[in-house]
Amino acid sequence: MKIPFLKLSKIFLPISILLVVASIVTLLYPGPRLSIEFTGGTLMEYRLPEGKTNDDLKAALSLFADAKEEFANVSIAKTREGSYFVRSQSLSNEKHVALQAHLKETLGDVQELQFNTIGPTVGQSLKQRSLLALVAATLAIIAYIALAFRKIPRKLNPWRFGMIAVVALLHDIFITVGIFTLLSYYTTFQVDTLFISALLSIMGYSVNDTIVIFDRIRDNLEEERKMQDFGQLAELSLQQTITRTINTGLGALIMLFALFFLGSESIRWFILTLIIGTIIGTYSSFFIATPLLVFWRKKTN
Image (cartoon, rainbow, N blue to C red; front, side):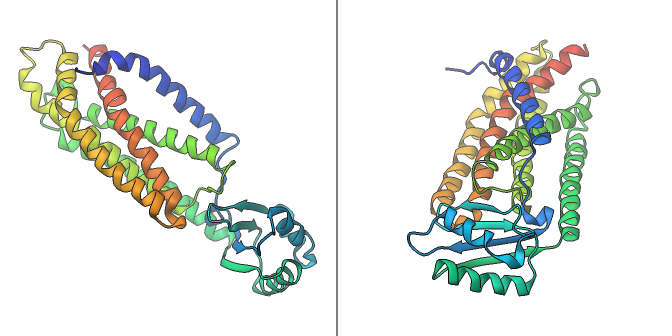
C-alpha cells in the first residue's frame, strides 16, 4: 500500500507550523536553561552518603557562609545515576576547598565527581561562536544544494531547492530545540556545546535525506512531459526513495538507542538529541520539504 505523501502533507503541514511557532515562543520565553559554558559559573557533581537527599544538600549549601552570594540562586538536580548536579555562580579555588570541607563535616562522606568553572567572558564567546557555526552551516547548505542542482531546468530554479531544504532544516532544528527547552526545566538537561554539536549533526542528516529525494526528482524530470503535473513527479520520487530512507533511518536509530541505554551518562542527552532529530528529519523530508517544493512550483506557474 502506497503512502499518499502529498495528500497527508495537507494535514501535517499545519501541525508542523503550529509546532514551529510554539517552539519559537518557548525559545523566546522562558527560553532554554543554558549551561555554564554559555553563562559562566561553576558546575559540581556530588554523590551523597546513603540516606542524604536533595534537601539535605541544599540545606548544607545554604549554611556555607563563605559563599552566600554564589549560592543565592543555586540549582540542584538529581541525575539518573543518583548523583547531584550543583550549579552556582563562579567559585574561587579557595572557596571550593572550603566548601568540600564544609560538606564533609555537614553531610559525611560526600564524593565530588566533577568540578568545572567557566568565566562569563568565555561563556559569551562560546555562545557567539555556536550561533555563528549554525548560521554558517545553514548558508553553506543553501549554496551547496544550489550548486548541486544547477543543471536542472531553469524554470525550476536551483536556488529554490536550496531554500526549501533549509526551511525543512529550520523546521527540524526549531522543533528539536523547543522540545529540549521544555526538558531543561524538568530534567538535568542544559544547553551546552555538546547540544550545539548534536544540532549540527541533525542538520547534516536532515539535509542528506532531503537531497536524496530532490536528487530523485531531478532524475525523474526527463519524464515531466509525460507527467504534466509536477506533483505527480514529486509523489513518484517520494515513493521511490521511501525504502532507502526508512532503512537508513532505522539503522541509525538502532545504533543511537543502543548508545542511549548502554552508553555513558555524559553523552545521554547528546544521543537523545540525535534520536529526536533523526526522527523529525526523516519526517520533514517527506511531509515538509517536497510538499513545499510542489506548492512553490504551482504558485509560480
